Length: 303
Image: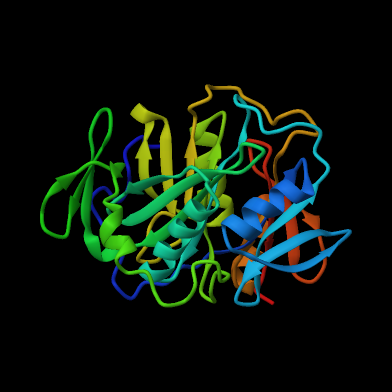
């Protein structure tokens, strides 16, 4: 496969719609109470249900994160799997509330300006990383891959870096009247995941050719690739090789991602079944398959 991005500098049409969406991300955690203090109280997800299938947390009636307590040890560096899960909020007021809520709970965070999005990063008690994201594609004009980085051109024609410090005061100035402690609102969703993988070519080929994502930024010099689901916001699945080639999944009992869910329409699901070869049928138009890095992916149609 080519090591050059197929869409260098291009953006999707303004009316383009994603063809792949996320369902819930399932996380193995060590301790119920500590995990709920982070994902429910500090992040602001609502507790929707708790049973033998896990602790389901969400917003606006949708489940976004499912916690599975009982892991024997926290997350460990050096393995394939989750780098971070990103919860996308619907507007700048909700982004401001999210940052303020983390601060109220004394959770360390790293506000970052990616130009095409604003984000803040935090780590749960097991070392699992959360990104809270506000999509801002209107601030993004184009990008160019350089030998060691990415150069982004913003809507004013300025050349920017991909991970600048975010000026948080203009965001916090937009805090709504809704209490900071109130749960996250409808429209909040899992917007992307970012994975550690052992081989970039294999990972990109699987998610492009089997699942149906599109190449957006392929950056071999910095060991990262970014795939699009076809919509205006291009950052839907990211992968990196920063832990080195040949890494494997962490030992059983380690906190991390158990599996994650992708939602597609019925024709797309039929195509994935045909291209994947070996799948596990989960019933109800849902299948499970394993990517080349050993991550389990559940794919189904929306309920």
